[in-house]
Length: 419
Ligand SMILES: Nc1nc2c(c(=O)[nH]1)N[C@H]1C(S)=C(S)[C@@H](COP(=O)(O)OP(=O)(O)OC[C@H]3O[C@@H](n4cnc5c(N)ncnc54)[C@H](O)[C@@H]3O)O[C@H]1N2
Ligand code: MOO
Ligand SMILES: [Mg+2]
Image (cartoon, rainbow, N blue to C red; front, side):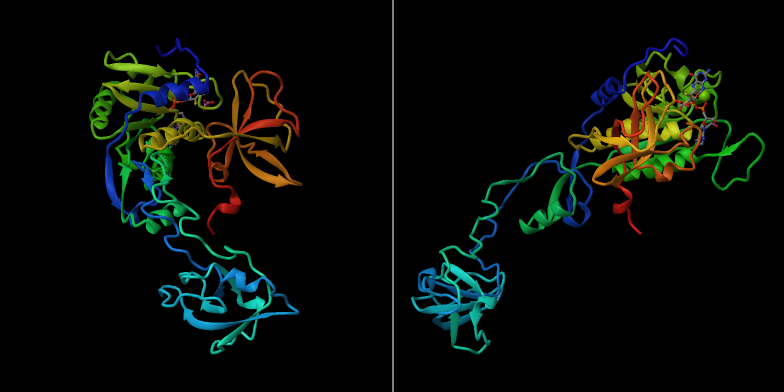
């Protein structure tokens, strides 16, 4: 099994992997904790929006018919009968020849069918009993009608949507102080490698500090999962098998790093021979991260990423992030592929599509993809700068400068990052 591997495409592998993931239960949370969670049911408008006719301007509510002859040279005089602030209910009906002084957001008085802004009136002093209208209005001018934006019952958000600040505004408007969301997936993290030291341990010859575990924990949290960090495993098969079975009981999905290649001590690769393991794939047509493996262990999903930090990062973005988002109930989790022009040539031929980390930038209205040439799978210094993967197709001799390439964006572009 370790050596005889069947290679499948990234697309096939992602589909196979996502297909085995369960759907998680739902729970109710307060609106204050809903940001970033995934809605578990469709939400409908509980009332018309707005739910009363209102003024979108500071001005005067009038009968449009009273203003038909009004112009700058020949303004029309109306009698001001009342002032209405936002939050108040008008007391008086606007009759012919009258106007109500009205503020932005205030309820329209009966009888009025248009609003004129202060700037198009004359002598609009607060105490004035008369106002001169300098413009003719049509019925409905400058009035936000009841239900204009949404009618009661309209679907305002759908199950599977990630709740962002805009969703929160809608929830608040319609009085949803509690909301049904999917439970956050518990994501077990496991590193394999007898060479791994804790972050606070001193270096000794032949050993390295465990960076994948810390990186994956951050990536899992970023994707909306709850990272559950298990203690690292030595490259010893029998204890590794027991530990993996035990850990899997405690989480919705287990993500491991290392031990997936063909080395003598690659424990995850050996695991695939176990009778209660259903292997989904153990070789994907891509570089790096081709040995990325996934399997069901006693029915539970295990994503085994390769130990090389760059490959681990890419494997997480393609399979880990999508899995966490799908487990969390989100719809449309596959990263959209956009096209950009290659900013510099990439002329290395490759038997598999190569996923180059890079950045996106705009120059003269053209979207440019700028590869990171620190692309050895074992390198990690520039992972922090990665905004996207630039896909160089298999075969041929790479791509020339200016050629269109597929790009998978995975992080906020630099202009959206905090700080
Ligand atoms: N004969 C072959 N050898 C290798 C092949 C191959 O096809 N034939 N594939 C190579 C490729 S591609 C990759 S990727 C790696 C995959 O390695 P593993 O997933 O088995 O990972 P390890 O062997 O455990 O480690 C690889 C590398 O990464 C370092 N590492 C491991 N874990 C961590 C961690 N938690 N934090 C930081 N760095 C880590 C480890 O020390 C190794 O240097 O196999 C190639 N070999
Ligand atoms: O898949 Mo490996 O990460 O190319 O080194
Ligand atoms: Mg190995």
